[in-house]
Length: 315
Image: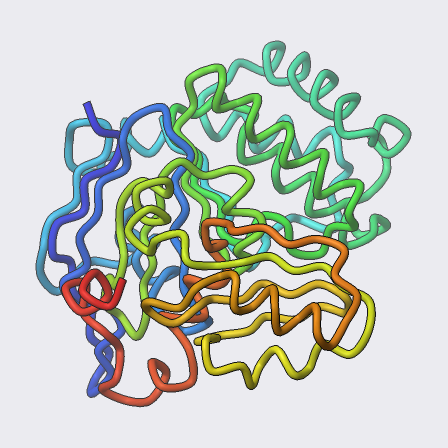
């Protein structure tokens, strides 16, 4: 059984078409990325899945049925815009949130103790939420989302506001929950997070699905005509090479997407003539480069978003 099935959902606000016949399937037990630039329609789609908003048309099934109170209790949702009760003490807040999801008080209290220890917040148990930093509150919000052990966990920009150490902690916890059988759906525009965590993705731009499926298959679809280049010297010239379709430079490292038919060796020869090459490798494109290739400046113009067929053909 699929965890989530979304079929041709549409949502319009006056003259603005926020989501236009979006369809995707989240297999049960997977980590699934719902991706796209800001304003693409990701959060609106999530809110329709959770019945916070009603679609103008289309259908949604979660865990085999339409959304209901019983189904909602099997879901955990971490919204991008957080909501905690700042005047409550941490312990009483989390016990209260657990009880809302149907847990007995004793069970809730036991789980709170365990989760807070895991999150490194034990010394804050009897202090008010308003005294906590933004990052600490983010971890508290996450605990409130998972404390009832949901079968489906939907996370909207879950790493926002976290430092690298706590972002890594949260990532490990999410993957651990997935290993235990929880289906994870998370929405983000940070491609590196997706690449480390997701098996499947749906990329939305301007309310349309442009790419959907298993990440490995999407990368194969885009071919392996990319190279990674580590060097010493000024690498700006790499952007101007005739064989390069797109260059992503970070200091002394470059990822280059080559034009159709271009030979990787031509890049190596050009680089050796201008800089000291430390690394050269033919690679599959990163999700970040695929994302930029599809949702670049041209794709962001009104009416210019490619269809799924166009994206596949371009690949």
